[in-house]
Length: 100
Image (cartoon, rainbow, N blue to C red; front, side, top):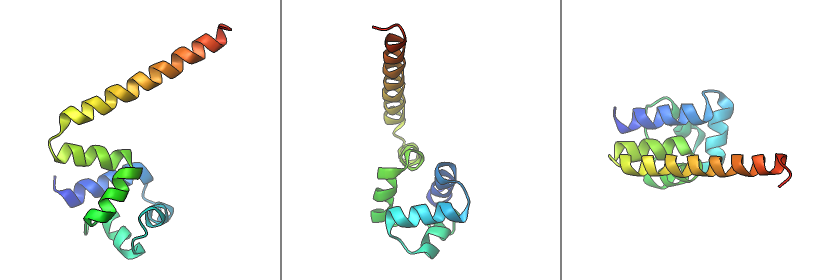
């Protein structure tokens, strides 16, 4: 899969495909609405500057870029960190329910 298509798919997974999704990404990146529509349609990809903004706000775009870069180790590390955090939250909830 090429970069443009991969980023378009990541944007659609993260934000959906509605006009409101485009508006959200326009607000985040301050990019031209037409450019953002082209990202969603896989006609063009974001510039480096806009990609960095998307990485800051989108887990899907971040994971996609790591995948394209062949950094599967970092994807695994992120997932493990997320699982640990969820487990910690669940343990706190159990403690709260037990009154402890």
